Image 1 (spheres, rainbow, N blue to C red):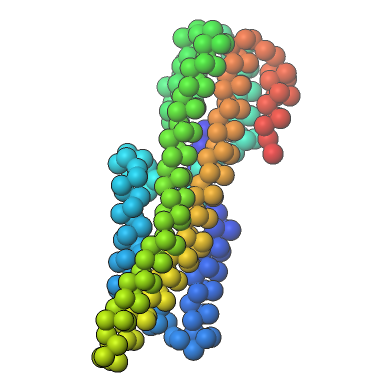
Image 2 (image 1 turned 135 degrees about the vertical axis):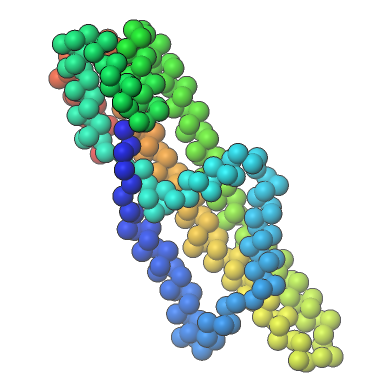
Length: 252
């Protein structure tokens, strides 16, 4: 039912503007772009942040988080009007040919969630059985997706703290090299750049990504709830018109 992907222009614009704000800000302040790069700060903050999250989550959740990050730019296309039209068509087929008339539709459906629901219809499952079965599937899917989104929230939580650790380590290096002025610059740079890495990555990337993913997941869940409601209506033998009136409440 989610058949395509559409580019999220706002997410693209947000990432570009966020990066531009940091890069242009550095240039306008007279620091130049090279001042923003420090290997030690990157290792401490970015690698350290990822390491902290790896300790926190299970491997399947982390892998899933990597897979769904594309939804920031290419969210699943949950076309409510198209879904409603298809549900109403299924309803008309079921009233004309019986539930077995939907067997070919179930076989051709590419969305596993929808195929499972239509197959339950074809098998003659009771409406409450369909709702219970699909709600379990929906709840499980939503929970797993949200755990993936929380990985980015965790990254956003740990990054500023690792930035502080990087700053402290940079200052420690400065204190150890007070007798060697030529080494003071790198220590001070690590201190300040680590702080930038931590705060900027959290507030321009990780936390916005987590929040955007939760919004996409919520929209996807509502879309699937509409499908479940439609399938249950078909199983009860509701009139297509009454199904349409009820399901239009999901469309926003």
